[in-house]
Each structure stands twice: as C-alpha cells, then as structure tokens.
Image (cartoon, rainbow, N blue to C red; front, top):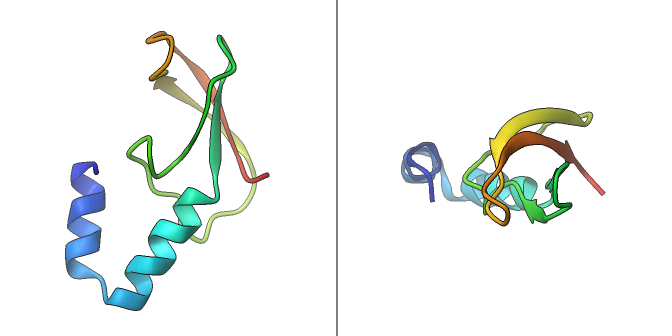
Length: 74
C-alpha cells in the first residue's frame, strides 16, 4: 500500500475503508505502450466516488516505461 492509502485506511471508519478499497479496485489502468492492465488500488492509487475516464502519466509496472495510462471503469 502507498503512504496515502495507509493514512486513509488508518483514519477512516471501517465502512468507508471498505468502500474506498472496493471503489478503487473497480477502476483499471492500461499502459499505452505495452497494454498491461492493473487496478488502481494495486498501483498504489485511490479512485473513490469518481466519474469519467482520464489519462495519467505513470510508470508501468510491467514494461517500466514512463507513459500515459488510461484510467477507466470497465
């Protein structure tokens, strides 16, 4: 878990904690270089009560390249 994830998990009530993790796990990231997909929570991010898709500059955990990742909810 990332530092922000640890902080929020430690201070939020248990119902919100579960909602935060479940919501973040339902969002996906896809590397534009190699096509590797992962969920936002496993990448160390939080996407809670969000809407719409976006693109983020991230380092891919598969190909290790810095590039744009599509963040979307399938």
